[in-house]
Image (cartoon, rainbow, N blue to C red; front, side, top):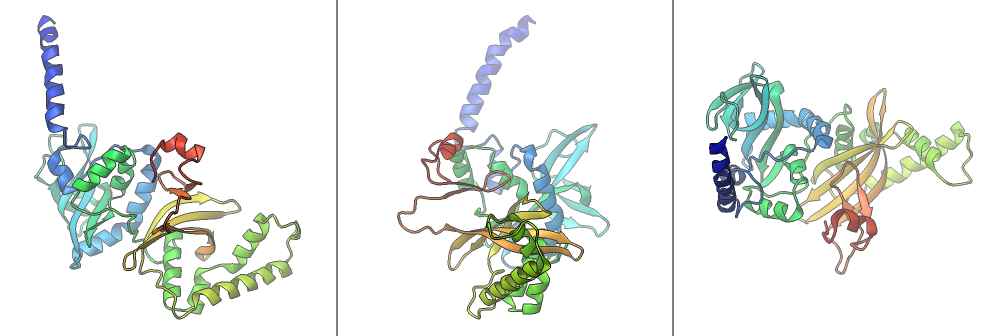
Length: 354
């Protein structure tokens, strides 16, 4: 007891000195080599556990197929796996990953762990079911890395800025490679992009459901001229108008390609009556433009279908002298503030502008 009391001040002093020495140039308390490699294990916000798991599960196919035949613009393949030993669990990134064709992934441990069997720089073999994230560096930008993206939201803006300067990849809104099918809302939106880019009227109508869109709009409108009880004639009239308007706009020959942009799906929220609103951010380079879209979707017996756009906003570049609105993508839904003087913005972010 006496010895521990004597050593306590020395231990505290050493902790202070080591923190001062090793942490002076690091924005987060992670090993320097792991920061420079980009294999970040950041604090996890449990609110986003399902968000991360959903995206990893529906985009893992892209990681697997890319790993089998990497394109010239792809490098930095890594997977994050859940490891366990004697009732304890931890996460680690593994580099040089490969799939053995029998339900396993092999790779080199990239992070320091406190589980003895999993030492850094040693090879491990894990079941594919243990994968909790994946990442690829494409054209210098991070693709995947969903836990990294949400983990960066747990640290302050200044430290985040400093950290991003040390990473071996650039960081934008990302690109979610969902399968182009009607099994997910995101897949349906990607299918619609394919249909528009091909100027395929029949495929556009397969991706959209103008009838359900008409019902939803009529049920949610505040127009006093719309009767409380909808008739089939009224629904059919709106369906016809919505179809004509959408096809006229999206069959133009000089329309910019939709799927040329990097498409990231930020959130999905309940919009009532079986309709959900998906928030999507599209990032395009050459020309540089980033846009935000809130789009209604609905599940039908034929799969997910796209309804109406309810918001289309340009995030960047902004016109000279532009001061708002500020678009907040940090939570599980989109929030908008008039400007930096908006009381809600000040309460949440202080002087920071997104």
